[in-house]
Length: 301
Ligand SMILES: Nc1ncnc2c1ncn2[C@@H]1O[C@H](COP(=O)(O)OP(=O)(O)OP(=O)(O)O)[C@@H](O)[C@H]1O
Ligand SMILES: [Mg+2]
Image 1 (cartoon, rainbow, N blue to C red):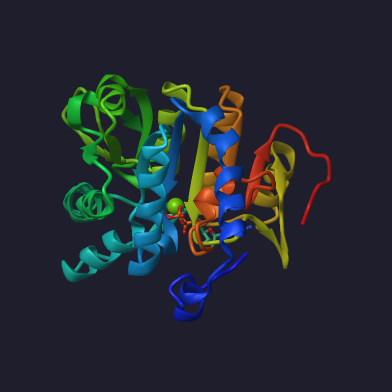
Image 2 (tube, rainbow, N blue to C red):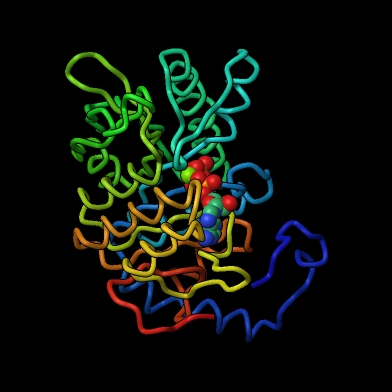
């Protein structure tokens, strides 16, 4: 797949009209199939940092919504949180890919994730003619949380207890794109930091989404040099145990299989650094990145 999307050579290269027409018309069966369906997109990694990549992502999302697919975005923002925390003299620590979160850190997360990061995405989509609405998990009781089983070590890190879909549904029904910052609340007034992959998974399950797509900063799940085209639950467990899958990929993989087990049939990890990977995944036969599947048939790149 072509990388460096902002490279001038790529931008000026022209395909013949017939070829362009052919490519566009190939999308038609997919548009017919997915019109009115819900796709949850988890947006994270490097694609969130580079301004050109962010632009392309916002264009892709806008186009998907405009052809009638209900798009729900859930975003991460680990890097932005770490930078803001640093400025405030706070050190970031992680355990198995999850951020250790105390009271000061949760304030940074609210300010950064539900504030600047969220609104930057909303604004970018609107620049391309889409209509997005920033949603914090606290808005309209969207994400109810409970302490993570490792709360003693992780602090105010939460697991999703319940997703209230009414606000998200309302936005989708009116053609808007909800852009969700993954923070949650409980009945005791606590606010929790929720891993964006977990939040995206729970939201996809609650909405009975057609697809869940994780947009990250890797081509797919790799084992050494190899990029896996598909990965099964059993393989994933082995790779985690062997340390082949580590860090932020652990919650992603675990949440992907939870989603698959709960009936969302199509779950992909794609590369936010690759040109228009989102459109290619949705509108082409081959697909891109790694698909999470129930059982393995040894089908690797
Ligand atoms: N086997 C693996 N294959 C691919 N990536 C892996 C693997 N094991 C660990 N990783 C790491 O997982 C990272 C992706 O998870 P990470 O949490 O950093 O990003 P994200 O979830 O896309 O973004 P955010 O956490 O900001 O929402 C990759 O950049 C890579 O370093
Ligand atoms: Mg992550």
